[in-house]
Length: 123
Image 1 (tube, rainbow, N blue to C red):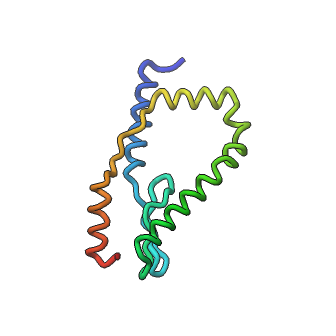
Image 2 (image 1 turned 120 degrees about the horizontal axis):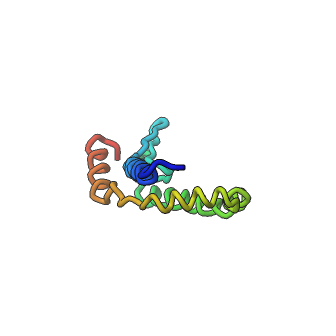
Image 3 (image 1 turned 30 degrees about the horizontal axis):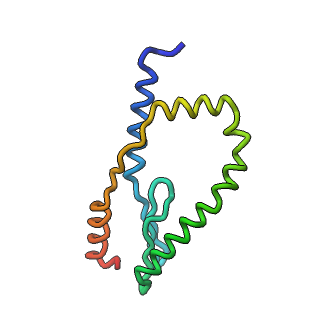
């Protein structure tokens, strides 16, 4: 038996976690190479000295294509689990108690971030 309102509390916790995760950006460097990723490990930016913006965009696009390419194999590898009724019950509960948060990282935020990085000599 569940505590009254506990589902609502869990839903609130899930939404807060989703909002916090949406705002996270990781910046990694190796030598002169710097990359920016989001909490889902989506590649947002690549900086290599001397690399033009078109090439940077092409790297990010290639990364996106590689991720998309692997999705059918991931779905196949996890099909047995995702087809399990217990898994579906948990998934349905999570979906019902969480809305996708509005992105907290806007295009203007991104522009400001990269402008600041440029001022610091990033590009």
